[in-house]
Image (cartoon, rainbow, N blue to C red; front, side, top):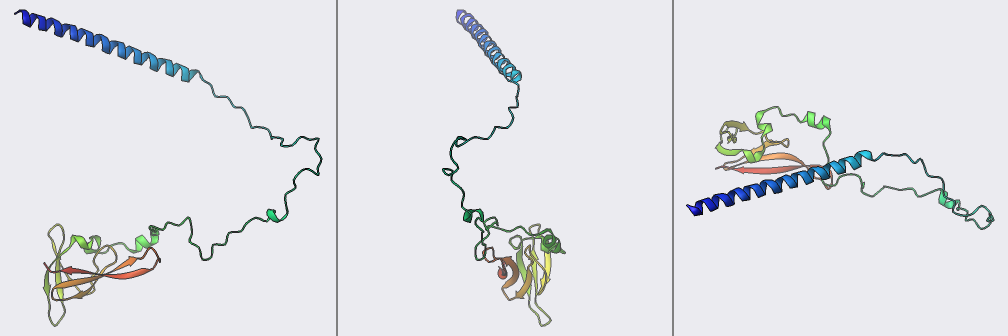
Amino acid sequence: MRRLRREKIRKRRNRRLLRYCSTVLFLSVMYSLFCVAGACASQELSYKGPKGQKVLLPDDTDKDTLVQPEKELSEGYVYDPTGKTDPFKSFIAEQESIEEQKKRKPKTYLETLDLSQLDLIAIIISQKGNWAMVRDSKGIGHVIRKGTPIGLHEGVVYVIKEKELIVREKRKDFRTGQVKDKDIAKKLR
């Protein structure tokens, strides 16, 4: 019994001490914030005006001792950019103009998908023409043939073989700025 009473008394003392310390800490923080806010509010901004010109040489010196600028330097340097890269042009990637983006609006659902999202699941080879079926990430199958637009980069189905499908996409070479064709093969699964 005595132990329980002693423990209760200790817990009460610890709670009181904790309340006291937290109250003192709170009041000291509030006081410091009040002092800082009062000091900031009492400061006023004053406009000093422009500085006057500095006199480098006293007025009583002779004009012969002053250094006169040469007439050749007044023409200045002219930058000739021929044969040099533009330092302000991004060498990583160029932004497409809004007109080009509008021109490339996807017309079909297959043009909104990247080729990595499509799986080649079937190929039909016949005398009338070769056909293939691709499945998108939703599991929907799409029948395609040579010339079908597909992919984000203006891709077109180029060749349908027995075991693979080749899509020709237009990719921009960032070093030269030219648009080149890139063939991407999708294997039958």
